[in-house]
Length: 440
Image 1 (cartoon, one colour):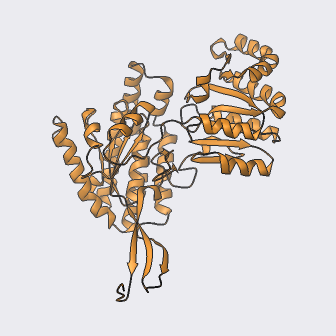
Image 2 (spheres, rainbow, N blue to C red; image 1 turned 135 degrees about the vertical axis):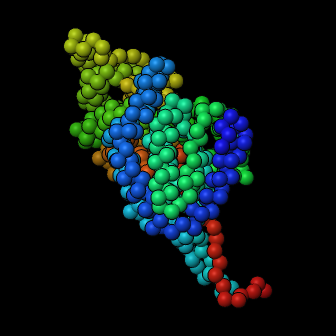
């Protein structure tokens, strides 16, 4: 395949994917599951070799001055690879939804009408940084009977090539077309522009990366797009709440990992519990070097309780000094992907819901409460793809939701919303069963 002529190359990828999608659509579940289990085995067998390829990407990223959170996303640790392998096995163990008929009802005319779940066909996936997305996308594509064309970021090209090679090996050894999962082998950006403008070959595009990438794809694509722009997730501490639980969850939601889109970026605290809660979570954030950008009320409470804590940290670990600063209006919109959190004191659940619906990116938002009515209101009224009660926003993930893996988290309302798993990569068509009925 000619990599120097981007148009010819992209058209070849598209035509091969289209041909492979027809074979995948009729592949039996046993064959698809065999490929997934084989892929899990290959990931474990090749963990050491994959880390060698990954090390080249990380070395190049560091040399190019890539930001810390982005370098963190690049890493293919044994734990990350084991999670990918388990995701493949979890998918293989799940029921095959392709061909399932739902809602079959007999009509007065005598015909029976229902809907059958079918693959979308071919999807294009354009993503940055995380090479494990190659496995997540490939495994979901296999299970859902689709074909896919994957274009990872240039910063992860060596890792992605190595992973894609294992995917195609697993497909071939299982009797499925290796062209069902193709990785764009060049970092030429022209390929992206052509990939998103091939409706004759590509049925949907899924961008996964920074806001700039997703805005560009959404603007220029000539095929449908499943997307989310950013992950400005909120955790709201209600009055009343279980204080110990609230502190534990707010800590995990922010500091478990800073780089994912499901990390909490904004903490809202009901005025009734602010004096008790903020000093506790503030001390934890301060010890972990988290910068706190606060509204005046939160700032006053934290400044009154944390000066000794901050001074002790500064003396013990000068490189880990947390900042306590006033928030700006822009902070309420920000997805930091860093050890920074915005903090605001609100009157109660009404103000919290209003704030979230105004500033949230509609990704994931959580309430910590012991009030059942407040919990139910939060679930109904917060307009986000995932809404949680007494749980960390870090659970907003296809693997954690039992989907086996995810291709991304959609903040759209059509065609899929939230973590996009198998069903998000399928469509429904109407099927009609008759016994010779004619319309009068």
